[in-house]
Structures are given as C-alpha cells and as structure tokens.
Length: 236
Image (cartoon, rainbow, N blue to C red; front, top):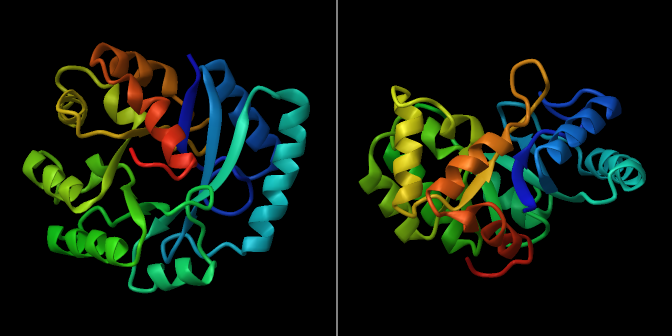
C-alpha cells in the first residue's frame, strides 16, 4: 500500500528542515523505506521561519526531482507550503507569493501553539470567504483545541480539514496527545496524516508506525484517498 505524506520539510535550504540536497535525498530514501510513494514538500512560510523566495523553492525542487527520478522513480513529488497564519497570508496566496498545495485551493495552515480559539476560528472563516480550503496542520498541538473534540467538530463544520503528525499518533496508552489523536481518528475527524519530518536527529520520517494505527482504526482513506483527492483539487 502506497502512502502520501502531505507535510514534510524535505525541500533543502529554505527553512529549518533539510539543509542540503544530500539531506533531502536521505529523507526521501527513508520515506520510501517506510512505504511512502508520494511526498508533498511544504516549506514554512511566515514570520516564524521567514518567506522563502519562490524562485529558490522552484530551483531546489527541480534539483531534487531530477535526482529522485534517477534513484527513486517510484516516488511522486509535489510542492506546497506550511503557512504560519497572519493577516497577510491570504493576500500572499492571492498574489502567488505563497504556495497552495500542488496549485489547488487547498492550503496547509499552521497556528501558534497558544493562539486563542477565536483567532483560529476566524482564520478558518477567512480562508473560506477567500475561496481557499484550509487544512489545519498538526491540530493536536494547539492548546485551544487539544482535548476539545467539540471545537474540532466546529472547525470541520466550517470547512476545515484536520492533519495530525505521525509522531503524535504512535504514543502509548498514557500519552494524552496520542490518546486524543486516536479518538479523533476513530470519530472520523482526522483527514490527513503527515510526518512533519525535518531531519534525522529529532524529527525523522515515521509514517509506517502511524499507518499501522490508522489501519487498526479502519481509517485507510487518511493514508491515500483523501490526500490524492486533495492533490487533484477534488472534494474529500
């Protein structure tokens, strides 16, 4: 079974993820070993890590793609962004400075860990009004929604989709964040899984173990169907 990793920092030299082309290739090799056959490179965009130049992003993506075609021809590569939300985010999308997911109307959006729920709620509304479809990156991290299933439900009803990190799903029974993610998965409130991988030191790809949990919850669509539809700009 091929998996799609929708949240990675494999694109080298643009944020706190891969530093060199060699780093990017090693991370892709690990993804392949874990059964991932499609990778979306979602570099940070926003005040926290900067605003990478689009030309540099495209140049590095082309370099990786050419090398990956030679060594890992079974892996499909796509571009996106992880957008740290602020008031100018939507205008940056409209102008083309910030990237959507594979050129679709889907956008991967990050918030501050302690941002209030009202701020997140209004941001999701704003994306919808502007014609974008927000995917909330690693939703389990935000204190405003962690352990508040009703708030997750409300955001989904607004038109948001929920992504969780693989690492958050594979904790033990005493891991509160893992328990919350597993409950959300069982309730059908998780739409995407991402490794959010950065490097081999602290944040390496870990999709295989998380996929085993997803399959136990009978939520196979999270691994392939949902992300494939997203990449093609279709409804989920």
